[in-house]
Amino acid sequence: MAERQQEYDTSQSELQQLSKKQAETELAYNELTQQSTQLSENYHSTQEKRVTARSEWTKYQAQSQNLSEQTAQLVQQQVQQQAEKERLQVHIDTLQNNMRILTETLTEDKVSTISHELQTLQGKQKRLQATTATLAVTIQKIEQQLMIARGNVRLATEEQGAILTRQASLQTKIEHFEQQLMAEYNVKYTQVPIERVTQTISDIEEQLTLLKKSINELGHVNIGAIEEYEQVKQRYDFLTQQRDDLNTAKDNLMQTIEEMDDEVQTRFKTTFDAVSHHFSKIFSQMFGGGRAEIQLTDAKHLLTTGIDIIAQPPGKKFQQMSLLSGGEKALTAITLLFAILHVRPVPFVVLDEAEAALDEANVARFSRYLHDFGGHTQFIVITHRKGTMMQANLLYGVTMQEAGVSKMVAIDLDHIDAS
Image (cartoon, rainbow, N blue to C red; front, side):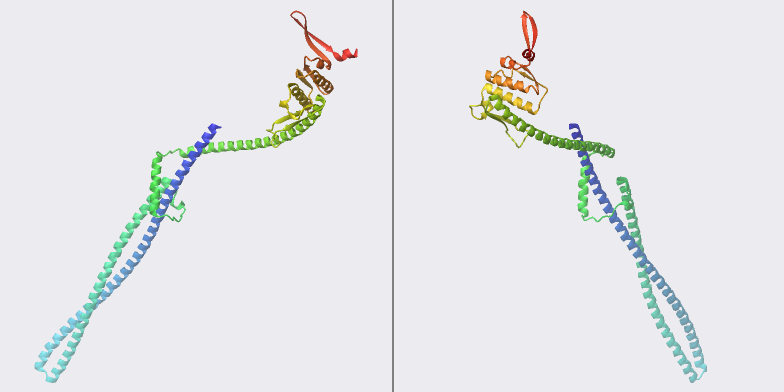
């Protein structure tokens, strides 16, 4: 039992260590799960930023294309107006030459008409110049807007590149953590239950540091711990089953003992009452009067109680048996023996000088009662008292008629009396 208890304690200690390691592993596992979840959130945030940047870049591209088309149209209009201006300038120069020629040849009316036409053409030329200047300013503004749009496109492109780089880095970290989860815990990220963590990152890092320190203090990792755990668990289950069987057997034994105790108490009380009744009756016959009792010292606990014999021979007070004389003690004990034989008769009884301490009167009472009781039980009495021999049915003795030769003598007193 001591070896089984020692094995049981060893198994319990190893189970506690394995439970501690399991708790530490689960905490580290939860930390990696939280980091993986955070990286996933960062990854999704980066994806949203990437989509937003791509949308803005597309918008800037459309604006840039629109501005480029407007610039091309304005440049075309400017070229057309420049050509119109040059055509008008040629026409004006031609008219001026013609006017100079006509001035020399035509009349004043024609000169004024031509001058008026020339002024009209010059007004058109000025309006065209103003329109050209306005278009130049507009083109300049459009070019500035185009430069701004191109700068925005360049910034959007750079931001998109940074986002792609960040996305690649996060993807690499996610793959690293997934490989670490698979290598250390043999689980996939998709198999990890997502739970909300109420602790802060600093608290988790502090706990992780303490756990790593504890793991390092444990020393080398026992690779066969799982197999050893299975063996220890089987041994523990076996010992637990044996312990349960022993406890069941113990309970059954205790129940049986209680039932036996109840039965013993019942039988003892019944027998004691019967013996007490016969003891009081036989005591008066043996002593020619008086009274006697047997009492329990602790009537509430029959299994541990003692028995007191209290007697009052004729002419004496009621007192403990220990205070009686030697002969009274002997006769009281013989009386108790006869009371027990009345309750529980036996085939025969051997008495070895039981009446040796009695006087002749008490020996006579003893021998007469022994003779009367002989109808129920056969008595074999070893004695030197004549009164006892006189009440016997058969006498057996040893004599030595010759020196050194012993001889057995048997006398049937009933036959002698009859003859």
